[in-house]
Image (cartoon, rainbow, N blue to C red; front, side):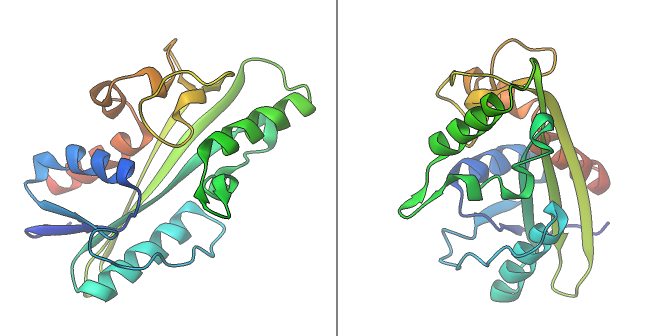
Length: 201
């Protein structure tokens, strides 16, 4: 896999994700820029897979700037809900005034209670990364973090569904872990570790 160059465009408008990416990409020695900070529009995610939506975001960012672009699509899969919300993870947070992940987490709990799902309510976070160069070369990396969901919310750190997700082998939710602790084990960290390995970093 070829080098990324001096500047890598991360195709996200999510400040929490961008912060994680910037920290995890430090070993590569690249300048990380976010799509939101560059004023790029968010493309519509129309695919039914994490890979498909990551490709949409990477392509839109790369074509708008001419820079190598990295995009991820990620989400939480709850086994008792048939893998939902999955690729609809962010959709469950949509409101008329932006995203509300408190609403999304409450819906997850409500649906689990409605079917009397047994404990532990196993789940996993998945992340698919796509790196796309201006000449069309593409690299794909995936990471997953197994665990279970809990209720009520615990912790104020992280973002998204972190306050209801307990990683396997841990007692605290991702929302209770420090930034550094989360970055040592997250699904995104695991996918990025594969990227760094591919680059020999």
